[in-house]
Length: 271
Image (cartoon, rainbow, N blue to C red; front, side, top):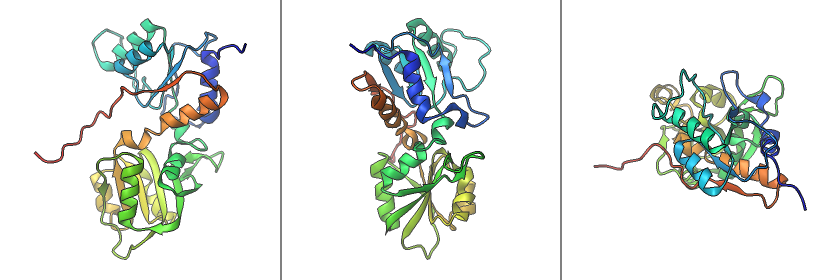
């Protein structure tokens, strides 16, 4: 009979696909609460954000490990007091439940086959290279440049984006007047507005990201077809990437994608 994987084993499977050395200097990927220790892992819950609700879900499922995309601890905590704010309460809940929390943020963003590469797959585009390659390795880095084997219209691209990312709305720019078909697209999961110039320089005709600023639309919206979806929608695929990384190494192990977490942003269509 094979032994159950430990918490450290499961985290190692995640870091194999999202090495911590790839994270940005300002990031806080890694263990957030608890330790990557030798306790048998009773199950792992995957989520984008760790909240009191996801901790309660992990407890209900019997999981002693949570793997998230966004770090729970990003800004310094000066105290940990019940009810002070959501982050502090989440830390308390996880410690009380004996749950280890691990985050793979920009380490997953920059990894081979990471967030932006997965976005290419979801749109039916062929990944070419990172939009901003890592200094030490041109095969890893933030964002992606991709090619459509058969060029698509603006309307078809919009349809694919809505369907692939379950996005109820897309903010779009006007784009170049002469743009009829799109064969090259830049993508970046999460807040990737800063890479619009790189996408233009790379010859992309469209660029998909989230949290794009108004002035980015003003400055670049006629030079490239900008598509902006919600931050949560753009990175929700992280759960599937984690799922595959863990399940490939530990078949028949209890891996759960959170069914409780929801996008914190609600969309209202007229009043």
